Amino acid sequence: MNKYAVLLSILDHIRAEAASTPRASTYLPEPTDVDSLNQARARAFIHLLLKVRFGLLDFTGREHFITDGGYDGGIDGYYIDSEARLIYFIQSKFRTTEDNFINKQIALEELLAMDVTRMLEGHEVDEKGNGYNGKILQLQREIGQIDEIARYKYKVIVLANLENP
Image 1 (cartoon, rainbow, N blue to C red):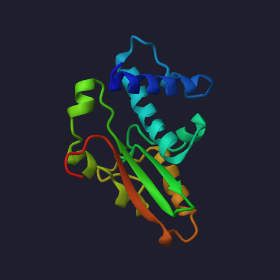
Image 2 (spheres, rainbow, N blue to C red):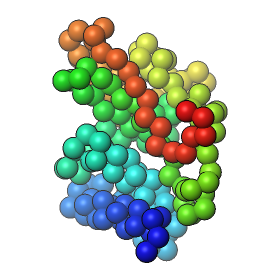
Image 3 (cartoon, helix red, strand yellow):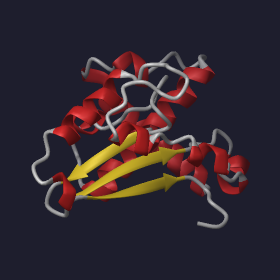
């Protein structure tokens, strides 16, 4: 089995964790619905990062940090590490073919589309006047409740191919 097939198997296992949650329909679409299957795998890709990097083993606990969707300000997920005083913003690009997964780079425009500064300033709408989704507003509330926020640092995790990081 090639590496991409192994990755798909892992992502499908993560998707299966959604079976007993309210998000089951998002993660377990009809197998013939290729677009929904790819979107579910893209979200599971972020779950994989949260599971491995931050030790979040519970599906529902990880889902809390996924913001991917319409009007997400270019932020697909986040994690607040209160011990290290770090707030991570995640930008993820899951590729739906093995060739693209290996070779296709994330475009600079996709990284520049992250509204991190605007969101941190408390804006509830993007530059075009579109309201941020509920998960981004949740992120803003969580950051707003952090004591001594000035002691926190911010990091962006790019979960994609990037030629010149």
